[in-house]
Length: 228
Image 1 (cartoon, rainbow, N blue to C red):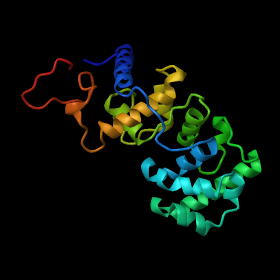
Image 2 (image 1 turned 60 degrees about the vertical axis):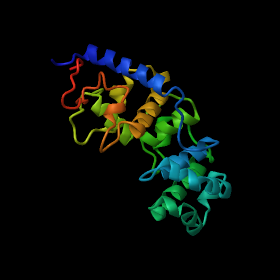
Image 3 (image 1 turned 90 degrees about the vertical axis):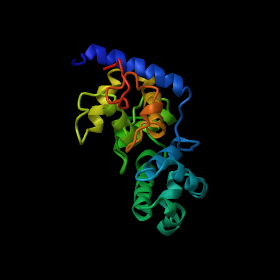
Image 4 (image 1 turned 180 degrees about the vertical axis):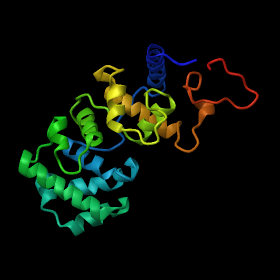
């Protein structure tokens, strides 16, 4: 039987209530002490893990504490610091270009709006939402691969069958279903749930707290289920 929009919305909120219980205190996995550090760390997190980013940022932040410092940095020295992350040459170019734009256009201060943040080189909506939600407490819903995968498997979004989902459309559709004050933690919880349980290759459905209502769950042979 086809699920109605109303039934889907109710299920989404029921499932999110469970995630709130399972993950009571979500937080950004990147370590930072100010908006500039978070912006830099988020840019560095592309194509690597937050855990790995956290291993290089203490030295990077201590060496270049302001946007102007980083804008004037010797690229070779930045490359040496962030080398463990991979793609260190291109990431160094991105960081210096970003720092230069921040210094020249915003006086080295990280802006607090989506339009201003995404006007900076190398900053897309995902990065801007991370900064808005975690540095400024302004509602933001970052859509990364975990969010796309989990919302697809849970069929929280209408294009769950798509092999190439649009992050902007996902952001708009999911945020329309939840109050703005939940957006940042909603993203955190979906990401943490994706990392811990709803893995990309082999989701841990046997230990999933959402298996009773997840439309993608298929019980092992011989086991009955009343949810489908």
